[in-house]
Amino acid sequence: MTPGDPIVSVRGLKNAFADQIVHDGLDLDVRRGEILGVVGGSGTGKSVLMRSIIGLQHPDEGEIEVFGESMIGRDEEEAKHVRRRWGVLFQGGALFSTLTVAENIQVPIKEFYPGIDQELQDEIAAYKIAMSGLPVDAGAKYPSELSGGMRKRAGISRALALDPELLFLDEPTAGLDPIGAAAFDQLISELRTALGLTVFLITHDLDTLYAICDRVAVLADRKVVAIGTIPELLALDHEWIQEYFNGPRGRASAGIAEREEASA
Amino acid sequence: MTMIADFSQNVEKGRCVLKFSGNLTILRVRKLSEQLAEIDAEALIVDLSEVERMDTVGAWLVHKLERDRGATIVGATEEQQTLIAHVTQADQPVKIKRDYEMPLLRVVGEVGAAANTTIRTLYGLLGFFGSLLISTWSIIRHPRRFRLNAITQQFEVVGVRALFIVGLMSFLVGIVIAQQGAVQLRQFGAEIYTINLIGRSSVKELGVLMTAIMVAGRSGSAFAAQLGSMKLSEEVDAMRTIGVSPMEALVFPRVLATVILMPLLGFYAAILSIVGGAIFCWISLDIPPVTFVQRIREVVPMTDLWQALIKAPVFGLIIAMAGCFQGMQVKGNAEEVGLRTTTAVVQGIFLVIVLDAFFAVFFTEIGWT
Image (cartoon, rainbow over all chains, first blue to last red; front, side, top):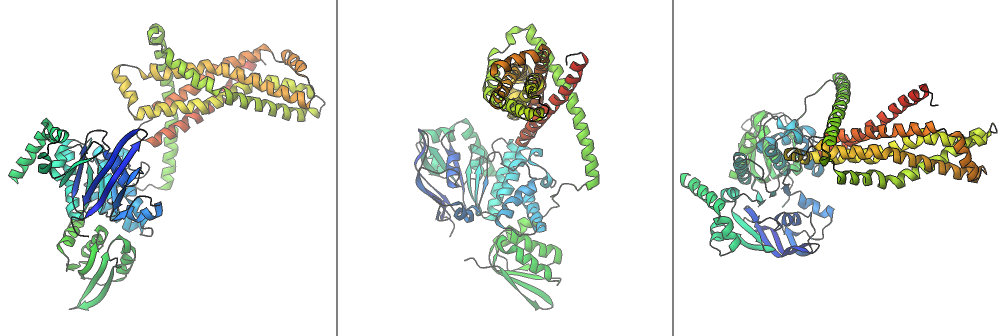
């Protein structure tokens, strides 16, 4: 596959909980090598979309392809070799609380590549920890001994344990202080360049959108109403998009992004 | 293409050249690292020109060759170079293992820690009891703060919903005692004394004790789990900041409900245990219920009931306090909730049995035999 090919492709997705329809006829493509930001008001089903793609939520209708393979109706065993190729960071980090950070990172390695000796596993965990910007003493700590930001970094290093091609991030900067959030943006951007990742990023953070996203998909009215670069979205005449990007916070983030570009 | 990474080895200008080909990824890394360990040549040249894909694990192997064996890397594409550079940058002395402790020292340390926790727990329980008394006093002074709804709800959860299981258990225990007793007493031709056995043991000991164990398992654990998860989700803290004392709003209703309900449940259990015994006597020993009841009235002194009714609220207090205390101690993670819940039940039952022994000695001393 060449850059630009869709690595994830969602067609006609429908998700409903009881009588509440979350998605109806949703289409979305994530291109290889891009950072796609997914935005939308609360309750528009951003997390549900992510959970549908990674197979935690069975959609009522629709087709989902990841790496060109259909994800609907697959059994666990078949889905396993696809799961190996992606990493997921959940909102709270979702680290296993009874394992240390290093052991957390080794869980997917042990699961998918049994037989790699412990020494090499430790080395892998060590450089993953350093890569995600955690302090050097973090590997032996339990999740409860880490701060929120460090837990997210540890979550990223576990998501990256198997060198995935595709990374799903659910609100990675939520709950971080602005310095931590900016550092996290930078980390994602660096990892993308270094590892050639494709990133599916759910966020509320306008700064993140301006700083690292190549394209932004807007969820509203149960589907993706628009997808494109921020200037492309700004040119659209959609009430929510205008309000989102041209509200006081949107303008502030745009201003910062412009200044940074000017000084660069 | 998923070609297996491999390497060829030959010597050029006195230096050993390792030429990798295929995919240099985590998939093949186990075999590769074993094979590489067998090569003892120094000053290697690593040729990556035929590598198709490389991930960070592959890059790590290459980096290790460079770091440990002074290898020179040639033929890497720009992407591979960046990857190796990133891995090199991430090669830091990261601590992976918890500090090693001598097993013997650890045992000594754990014994010490356990003793320390026990003392602290007793101390904490005492403090908890104190603050419960303070809350009770302040509720008495400000009856407005008496939360009738919360208490009624606990009545239902602790008492009403326990009726079936406590009743069934006591009924069966009654039958078992009657049966076992009858077998032994028959040897002396004293089967009639089965009634004494059932009556006295049910009223004085078993009714209350079995109820206490059941309540500790049902409600003590529930208290610990509820308060524990409320503590985790910061509900308890939110309460404090609003000015509601968790002691008054959460602990007091639970303790009060358990203290009031324990004697009631204990009495009910004793009655059902006697009923169980009566049915056994009727069926197996041909003692009609009328005779059974008459005899029960003759042989069970009133002091037996007083003993039960005095013990029951104390047991209730202990169980509810252990549950609430352990719940309020939860901090950190969800695992702690489970641990604390277990501790609450174990502590509750243990203290109840210890106290029961004290009560037995005490009541014997004052002549309530």
